Length: 235
Image (cartoon, rainbow, N blue to C red; front, side):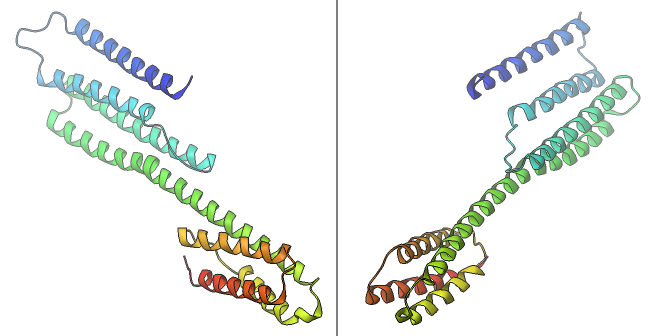
């Protein structure tokens, strides 16, 4: 079942449940009292409707984004626990009011407090979980890029060992740059990503080609400038 078909099924299920609840209301209250429903009865049926709608909210808004399954499961559990706590409180209060064991106004206030607290936990389940998932994805992306960068410079460092003694000064400069890159920390920014990509390309070019001394010096200078720019970036 594709996402579109799943959404249609959810809507049909919601409408079918609503129809069943309407039929139950009509049957239980038939014939309708001449003076209409009492305040307590209205509160009871309004609560039933609210509970039904709240119960379906996680089905229509079930997208909890997280890079890790355990974090996603934890968020979903928090959402459903919050929904169930509110449902239980609302139903208990509705029954108490219907049987005139509790006042409508007090029950309404208590229910709103429970709803507010449950909504906070639902917020953390959905939106905080999504934010955490987004942050995790960004961190993994930045870690992946910095790892790729360090690998490229490790290869460059190994290649410099094969350079002739005539290139000792260039070798020393490159090895210093390799040490600088080794201790770089990941930075989650577009500028850092662009610099890291340029560094990887430049390091690969320097490692895989036999450049003349003048061109090598130019390439090392370019690499030095890029490394210095990247070192200025911090979290």
